[in-house]
Length: 229
Ligand SMILES: [Zn+2]
Ligand SMILES: [Zn+2]
Image (cartoon, rainbow, N blue to C red; front, side):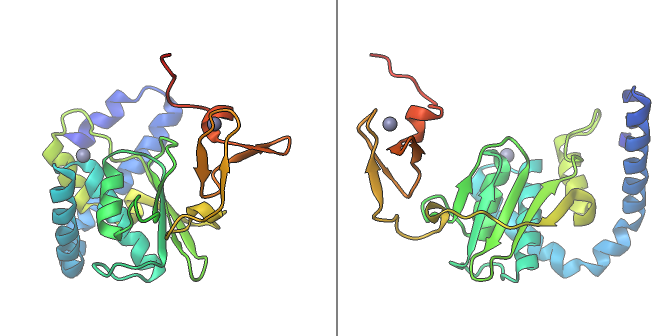
């Protein structure tokens, strides 16, 4: 049903070409699926083990955690980290505060509280994984095939994403992370300033300097709240 409906939905001719291309890739992928799955039995069981942990933490099974689990497993493999072995050498930056972020946390073992998981809410389905000791980093984004298509149930979506290989699901690129002191895990630094506008303390070098004066971001950039009195 899925493959049949896609060309009808898309109107723009440029888009048709793009979608057809992707469609052909998907069909090819589907044809290869059985063989691949047989070859990747061990990986599939590893994936299932991680996904079960994530589902328990997240509270439900969804496309987002399937993608997040696969993405994190891929990144850890690329950087030479073993699953189920917590490390202090890994820092992750996620670019969306949705389901996927829970999968990243559970599979990588990185958390907000440890300072090893950073949320930069750009609204993009992407994560960057940094190996601190070497500076190696990979940024992984999705190829936009995780959206539920008309006629596809949630269960079918989960199955499709589970059975699609990483090279179809993701784009992976090597990047250099511009690390600031406050981005590294561990105890917060002793370095702190007092914002002259709100009078609150800012730690971890998260202040902004304007005309030689250090302020908190909420006062001079953007605040997510407004005071009522
Ligand atoms: Zn979810
Ligand atoms: Zn302030």
